[in-house]
Image 1 (cartoon, rainbow, N blue to C red):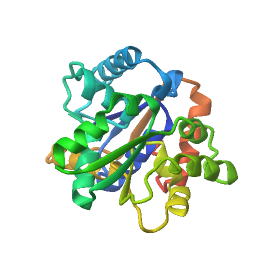
Image 2 (spheres, rainbow, N blue to C red):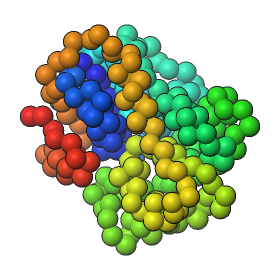
Image 3 (cartoon, rainbow, N blue to C red):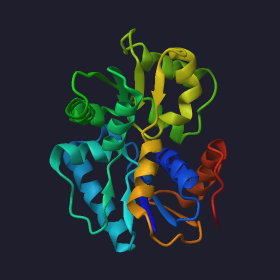
Image 4 (tube, rainbow, N blue to C red):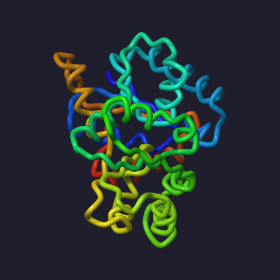
Length: 251
């Protein structure tokens, strides 16, 4: 069984890629909605939340932990990963692989304030790709929009446009440094135009999960959803989000 967690609904974009790549594997998705958004919290608190979330997933006997929270990965990159019995697939490392595959040298990263403040994307990309130019931009307004289901219309387009205004004009690629952001892709594509490649690290994340599990038992394809927040509201939000992502949630 694969374990995933995020602060909220954004990690479902990673789950969607996992389901495309590994349709028969059982998955456990945990949303720490009691603490969403993560991006405005102090690093010490985020490190403690990461420790608790990893411990909980390990207690569920998962075979691997496929990270679906960029902010948690950024904190781990800066301060070190807490102990984990199950191997962890780091989302920022997957992003670096995706950027290297794209061949981009002028790259923008949009992420939460905590992720940008940690500087983890810049360090990871520069370590893996010599000569790359990385610009990190915080986008704190986007996670609340996605959590509220306001992913269409004028407000979402305006919020994306405001973020993109802080990016260089000669950008080659834009990396979604938060798993909430891919659901806003139509707005990013419209604002940035066809000349900027949009990179979702979840694609490589799913491939790395498939490589790691290899000959692991296929399972039943069931996904178990758990939240630390309001369970009824969460279930409704999961159904809405997965429908938008063209993924069917197993009962």
